[in-house]
Amino acid sequence: MHRRPFAAAAALAALAAVPAAAQDNAIRVLAPTWVGFAPALVAQDLGCYAEEGVSLDFRFEDDRANVMAAMERGDIDADMRTIGEHQGRPRTPETPGTVIGTIDISVGGDGVLVDGSIASVADLKGRTVAIEPNIPARLLLQMELAKVGLSINDLDLREIATADTIAVFADPSIAAVGTYEPFLSQAAQILTDRAPRVLVSSREEPDIIVDIVTARDAALAENPGKFESLLRCIYRAVDFQRAEPARFAELAAPYFGLTPADITEIVETSLAYTTYEEAVEFLGTPDAPGKLHAVFDQVMALNLDFGAADVKLDAAGEIDPTLLDGLFDGHSR
Image (cartoon, rainbow, N blue to C red; front, side):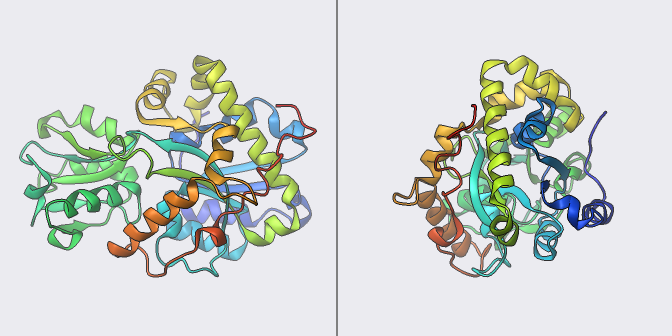
């Protein structure tokens, strides 16, 4: 059965309708339609959540504003997005959401697709560029523009939903579209009359686009155990992907309406799942901050410079490594 993004109102209403008593061990998650989050879903097929005594309610929602509102209301327990999106406006230090783990890094899965008339980023000046606010491709585009003394303000910017990438880029008035997989490859393969090519992607900036797991603070304080279960299941599924990539692709494909071959190609060319050990390296320990803190600060500076964030956030205040510390102690890997 294919799982596709729900309409925002219906998805959030369904989440909010779960009785409070049933929520104690239910993990309600919203995340964009991105194959990087597949381990959380495949873990369900592997029976991990049932073994942990919890349940997963995972739904796709590409609109960050809807996700933040759901987090504020307590309709969800966790979300998964990039560290850069986590920082974007209107987040302040008081906004709910603490980073408790990583799930993947983008190594080509986010990018800006241009038509054949664009030879370099400088050619985008004054042209119409379509892109969803706060997604990684926007950060990559801003970094590329800065190299030639331009900014996002030098473009005719149109805000879109990333899921509409193909329909939007089919319009010849759109010179470029910022997007992510699978929409990036699909648009390039389908719209050949535009002579499309990738202008810039996360392949050039592999340490910038890190996908994280963020927990709602009140839910984390009330029941940290279910978030430990979520993380254990994610990293078990990552181990499974490393050991049996073909079977992982078969299990992941229906959730995204893709074929196993599509999943395999995206994973092999666009992203790298983070193992438990790599996640610990990113978040560090309570006594020694990991490398995600430096990434956080670097991306924070870029978001402030480019106007994607209004408030400077402190990495130590946004990242909590305590759940990862000894996560598998007393538990099978």
